[in-house]
Image (cartoon, rainbow, N blue to C red; front, side):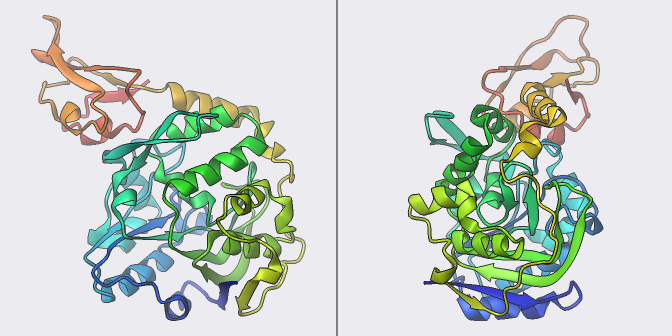
Length: 363
């Protein structure tokens, strides 16, 4: 039987809920490599309720730091809007300050792993995720137009850097297939401990809805299926109606049946909580969402030949060696220029981030 903690909290006293979560679940962190993964969907102010609140991250970082880990990394790969702007997204959300010296752009060093061939033969996963002994996931209590609930399982979609998120969205095509994709991604490296920011949650057509709800709690657990089941029940949803939870249970990841979950605290359904359609049609029929996904799959870095100095920093830092330095045209500003292999490029846009001359644009 899994346990899930529901503890009252505000952003001013969230450290109390974090203390309770660590006391109840006692994650073994001493001497371990620890990765903390917040939900950094895109650049947004903390008050927008789109991302994990920096108060929660700060409290968790302090708790982990005191546990004397061998190493600590705080990182995420932002969503479709955030490719190539990892640090900027962390800064805008307040999470960069909350992470302090432990922040790292985890999109710079991906590892290729076999995946479900029904969608893609291989995907890239951030090496820091795979190298971690303990992964602590900090989801935001939100709705999602495709998966209805985005929480413990869906937060792991951010272990994929760059355009792999968009490519899998496109490959899944139908909502019920995307439910399976997010579980398949989660299983690449299941997180070990979950602390959900449910102080202020999101209802309506998430994951970037303007409809926020004061919920006033933190949810924590060490089983993703149980945590997401509790979130669903709080939203007024039968967990068995969510395809991704059924698929996760079939895969042996845990049980969503309320009778199999021990609640530490008080579980109450939120009155009149607004949900997207349980079919997932909120995004599936949204032309603008499909256009965004298609655009993110097609955008590629382009070099301004006049501004480029041929220093090779972009090629050196490209995580998949998609850039090589070659002889340039005579009228170029540099004698050599980076040339892109578009088939190899994963659209993480690390090259744009590291270019000292700001000579790379996205087209």
